[in-house]
Length: 457
Image 1: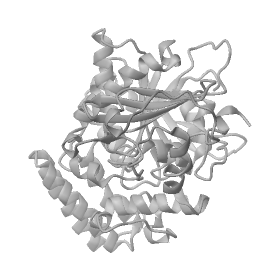
Image 2: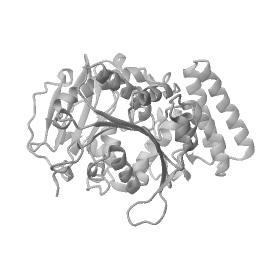
Image 3: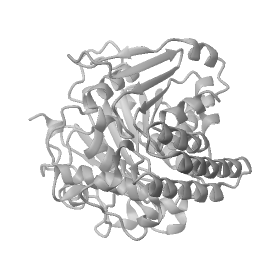
Image 4: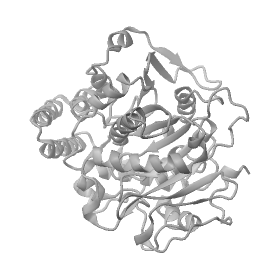
């Protein structure tokens, strides 16, 4: 078995001393052959981000282009990239600890991070240190990347770094991308920012909120009466966003999702072809039950876990994975979702990040938007709407171009469309919901190869 396909074996480790949860600072360890690295970076006093790097075994010895590195940013807010993105979507192993045929390691090195502090294996020693804004999260993540630029050999050797995000992670990617681009332009960071990819990303909460009723009416999950009421609720959230009342807008958005749940026979907002009640196991708690969005997210993850391993992802993350890593504080319990992190960001959730995307485009940074056809929470029509709000001077030319159909492997079926102009790219992924790499792994793998221009593409 390839080195990257056996990371959960207990191998001898080169471990730096870790004296306890209060002294993480910068700690790096990993596999003796360098195929994996992981560690903590103390991004602020008593605030520690955990990261995990995998070196791709598909690297070619003399690549025509520098081999790329993908930094995966999970959403939620409060979801663990080290657990979910890694073991449920694109990492070398699935949650049953079996090799994943569609791992993105075939196209790039991978870095997973539990972001922001308080998520997954990342932690703070004081709850007041949790971030309350996307830009605070970006400042911490920038400190992390600056540290990784000196610790990960591939980044030291010029590997371009691609920020790839999912869901709320797209807001992190927007602010982090701008923060890194500014630091690079100011000569404060020696790094190549290859691009930013936004997967089903909550970049413009207003546009997504307004899209729910029309979409669900069109696919017959709401009737006319419920649709009219849902549109009115969405308009309230829109007005509150315009007035800068972001906490109130979050409350209205959440009420809308609960209304949709009650009037649609509990449509799965991550895939409108499904009911959320179809999930065989629910990990919802009394805290999660107060929020429809997080309840459905937990149910989705529980479904994936139950299908792969009876111990679920929490079992491996608090068991064999924690034992392998060795540096996780003993009193830390990994959770797939941190409700305290989510709560700290409630007043930030409904703020748009379109201006940050415009800034990235103005710098010449490659920006990719990709969306699953069946998603509701971050619908394709919502993504198309916010793209139309860009001030980027190439937008008119971009929208005038025809889309190109994409197929995967030996399939003759169209599985996606793509449109590209200069440094903006948009992928429409057919047959996928919110979690594109898990729903359509073949076309997602081809897509990330194209985005990163991997020599293995």
